[in-house]
Image 1 (tube, rainbow, N blue to C red):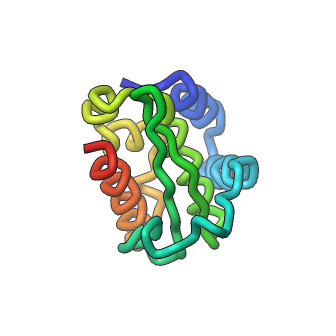
Image 2 (cartoon, rainbow, N blue to C red):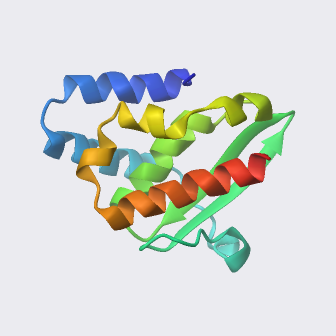
Length: 133
């Protein structure tokens, strides 16, 4: 189950055949993603297990999940934007049913991210799942 926003990213990736173009698109998503207020870039919101500095600030309003986030690495900011598209607006039961590895595999990220970036992406997904639980 994926959100319309995530499906739009999947469609764009299908259109972009070259991984370099996809990589640039992820960076553009990161540039367009709203920045997290520095007041929230604190240890409580920091995601451990990422090579870069990453902060995710979850929010649950009216039973729907959302989050703000940022990173000091542009590609990671883009990955945060991708995760936002995957999860934002879902109810907590819906979020628990998302198979993030399978959904992200549709983008081909597994084959093109370094092991450190892949570990960081898994850490971000785990933080989102833990928060929703």
